[in-house]
Image 1 (cartoon, rainbow, N blue to C red):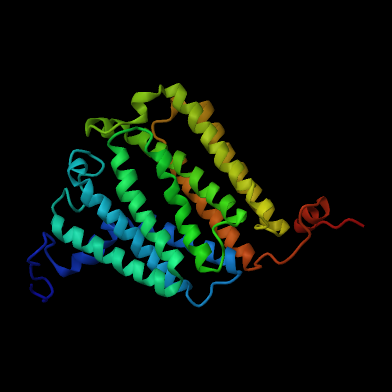
Image 2 (tube, rainbow, N blue to C red):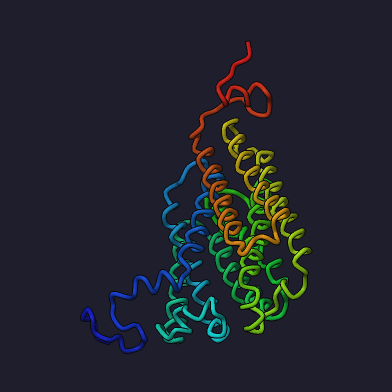
Length: 324
């Protein structure tokens, strides 16, 4: 294999070494993988109250595990991706990468991510990480070809990165606080996936994949998505009962974010037939989850300070009023 810049790479369709960084980021679905690493960091902060010495290692480990799992998924679905307009430009269908090279990259990322999870945290973090890969690539990927409701068992994937961070920060998986956090990160995945399907349902059907657009009418989907968005918001509002989002400013901001999500749900319910695309709702939902993750982390770092919470006095004090 040549190592000179601009020379062909013998075992891949990539024409130059310059293309590799962009290709690897695309192949590993960097945005999704970064979100997984971010929620893992949040889990560690919530459990420990600080980042901890192994935070960087565990976050890089989760990032690599997520990238490897996403890459392995593309290897598994390369033929299906080639039949869909949305995915036919991915690295495997577009022949920018050979299947054996893609498989090798995915396996290396999973192995390295597993090693960093073990070194940066503990065996529990490693087991959770490998379980996530098994569940995503073994269970969810298989069910996608069999049922339109694969996203339901697939929601478990969303709760695993925070759980990895939680156990790496010294927390226990039996802690009910972690279950409340996990519930939120499970539920949001349903509307996240189904918004995606609504915009590309015909593409899924053309590729021979089951789609909820064949199971439910437009009116039914509108109601279902409305309920799932409300459920996501309600599960978020349960988090302060775990003791997180402890300061009044954090709770007010959490409530504000959730009202914003409810407004999005209401727009979908009332204006469904006028929407040419659900991209706006998909983006808003992702921003909501990102905002909640950031808010919980900042509050655990005492960014908002300590104020009275759970009382009218605390809430008024948080927004600048004082009772005499």
